Image (cartoon, rainbow over all chains, first blue to last red; front, side):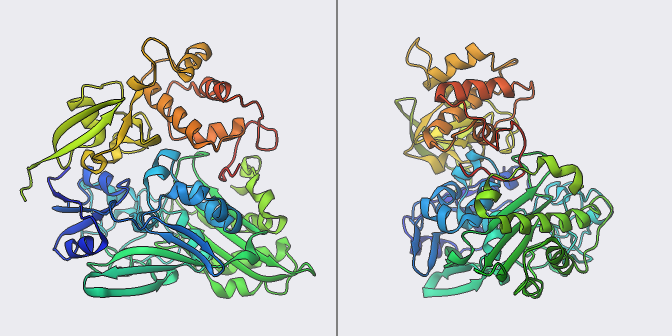
Amino acid sequence: MNPFVFNQPKDLDGVLAALQAPQTRPIAGGTNLIDLMKEGVMAPPNLVDINAIGLDEIDVGADGLRLGALAKNADTAYHETVRERFPLLSAAILAGASPQLRNMATNGGNLMQRTRCVYFYDVGTPCNKREPGTGCPAKDGFNRQLAILGTSEACIATHPSDMCVALRALDAVVHVKSAGGGERSIEFAHFHRLPEDRPEIDNTLQPGELITHISVPEADRFMAHSAYIKVRDRLSYSFALVSVAAALDIGDDGTIRQARVALGGVAHKPWRIEAAEAMLVGQAPNEAAFTAVADAILQGAQGYGDNDFKLPLGRNAIVQALTSAARGTDYARGQRTGDHQGEQA
Amino acid sequence: MELHQQYPVHLRINGQDREFNVESWVTLLDLLRERADLTGTKKGCDHGQCGACTVLVDGKRINSCMTLAVMQNGREVTTVEGLADGENLAPIQQAFIDCDAFQCGYCTPGQLCSAVGLMNEGQAKTLHDVRELMSGNLCRCGAYPQITQAVAGVMGITEPGADGKTAFTTGPVLA
């Protein structure tokens, strides 16, 4: 690991002031940043420990959920009301990492984690995200884990989070502050970005800004019909090849009033196509309708060799997630998909 | 401030107050092994992927390789050396022996601390839950069935879970 100066301000203003200095990174749980520093992928000369400033609230009110940036992933997922009223979010968090890492990782840090593309991690190889302009060996290399949607000539990395997939589906908002009273809110759709010709930039957070909390609007209409499906190379403790967050609002007449579908493991940001969701409104929940939606969501998807399988896998996973959601959140919670993996593949 | 300066770190480790001066980049794992002479905690991957370095900080299990010692200043740390009460093994340690839950033993300190953390969390209700919530600890000898048996035995868990079948989920556990 590179030598660095460590600083632990005692309040938010102290942190925001410290972040004004050039080449300064905040550290919260550290589960990604420390790893990146050990690998030499990142080498900040100044680290600001933000763990002493609070911002760890988990509040649920009539208008929705407020998650402090420094609340731990595990505390968020296991929070009784989050579990009951935001089962999609709880399920997505628990699908990620391991119990140890979820005890360390924070909600803000989850958003800020970087791609696990092997070329990004291997400082002996070119990578446009790590060193702009050096090239992307992934497109013609080992790309089993990598993106099929929203890619660019420069980069086919994926965002690795599960939590963020649910936050995108639930229209979360990211709240940030900066020194001097600066404050703004960023819709989740606009927080992470596509690589385009600047793959070194993961998100729209500006230098000096710190995430203070994430809000999720009230989503009780989806409580009874939510499912998070994660398909991966082993059954636990592994990043998604494809994941799907699905939520349905089903009326008394059995037709769909509203649908949400977001995908992980397929793009540089959680992938969601609102126009495709609209196709389900007024429809009965059935496989034909779900398949049509899946095709609309995956329109334009392109494989790069090793990851070609993600096209049919993504299609099947969307249908399965929507089917599970339609059967009910309780069904989805106990859902075992191992028996069906052959069919999926 | 200097890049190579040392930072004072106070930790209560296995019930003893300890003072250290460490560089900023020293992980909690390296402090335990290299500075505190507690080599029970193992360095497996050093990248948060294997769980061999699992310890309890304020009762919660974490990967000690993925946090800096300076970030844990003032905390209470329990390592595998702190689980037993003198010569009396903790129930989970005795259960590992009784269930033959290890072969080479390298992952065992992490497995034991992780199991204690799992019990503190109180989320596991079925054998399926135990497997899922022990998945942060790899065992390359493949003692998983015996490890599950040991943890579930101490917790009094017999319910299989996951629709009564023993395997597989690609989804999370929401017991």
